[in-house]
Amino acid sequence: MPTHRKNRKNFQPARSTREVKFYSSLALIVFVLFLFLFLFLFLFKTSIWDGKGKFILVVNGRDDVLVSVFDPKREAIVGISIPQSVQITAAGELGTWKLGSVWQLGHNEKREGDLLAKTVTKNFGFPVYAWGDSKAAGFTDRRLGKILPAIIGRYKTSLKIGDRIKLGLFALRVEPAKRMSINLADVGEILENETFLDGSKGFVIRGSVPDRIAALFSDEAVAAKSYRARFIIRTERVKSIDAVSRVIEIMGVKVASIVKDNYEDLNCRVSGADTKFVKSVALVLGCSKQKKKGTEGNFDIEVTLGEQFNKNF
Image (cartoon, rainbow, N blue to C red; front, side):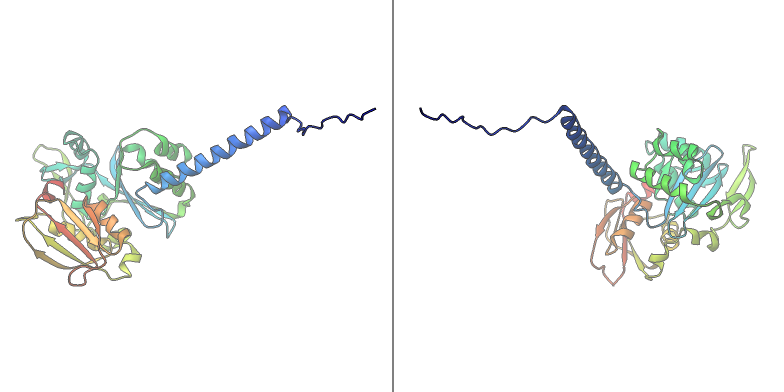
């Protein structure tokens, strides 16, 4: 009688429902982690601030205009209050105003807070990198209830979300002893009381910012390199060349040359081998940037000012 052998088939037991759920959950967790990592890196890459050098933010405060200096090297925050009643020369050849009116003026001129940033830079020499409405004042606070709205709140600002996260995290770790407040109305060398023609009281600018305050804005790493800057004027007139020179020097660079060249219908252009510093100058002045291994005459930074510059600064 023939022997019949049963055909053996490869058999793999089905995974249990519990295993399927486990691996599905694990795949979802890995996906979410990669998504958060991607978003984290993307947000930080597209930010203005690298989180290492000094960062200056101007805020349209409810009572004063606030200029904040975030200093990672010293783990410090300095807030400088400027009275809204200070009479200033608005950027962009827009005339004489009180500082508290410039935010609305910027809105009217479709320049938003950039006009306030450029106006503060022009009148006081503070190299402002970014601007924000009153909620941004939370970055100088230590309370989470103030910092959180500054990070996730809706308000007008040039800050990217990556900048907000960095500033918020930085503000949380700065100790009270490393926080300083300065009111320019109390600094005698700069502002002077004035009664204006309409009978209102305020301040006028009588002097330059003293060195002890200007030093708060200086980039020590740049200053240590003894950079030399050259300005090239490609227009018939640049009314604010002294103000621009002052800003560059406060940032830590010596202005070694100012020359006039052929007319060019541009705003301004910054070039130099130090891409990080070129970016900083471009942000402050509102210029385009260009990387160069060297500039004519062995200058480290070259700033070209064209016909459109007066309309912007």
